[in-house]
Length: 151
Image (cartoon, rainbow, N blue to C red; front, side):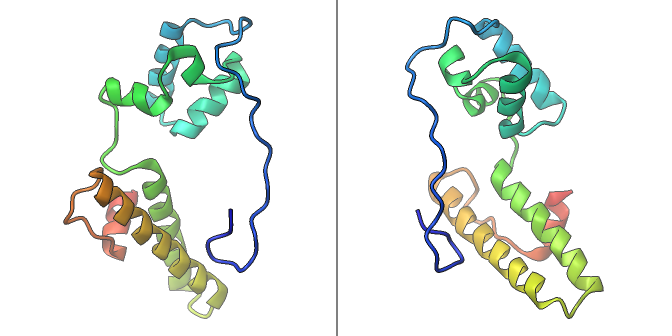
């Protein structure tokens, strides 16, 4: 896959080994894993951080194989979804941080370009979420909206 903002090809990463059932050595049952997912979400962890924590601390290699649902599906079933998707809100947080940097360092042209690239990603992602029905059709990105929603 090619990179978004560069004229280079992407790097090939490692792939997860193909397994179709939960390994026998996983110490937790499906109900316990769901409880941990809800608890970690309540502590403020993102979905990716929840998966990494379950993998590293509780020896759960794949939540979907262990429970039959992904972390996002578990949280949606419990009614714990946020109004903005995590990837969009993290991009908006990065844009707000760069805007604050640009206020103090107006001549920093590389970060000015970085801000415009992040905002382009935000607009592209918001267009996708509007098409999928995750965001309302009238939602629009602006820097002031980003400052309010990122906090």
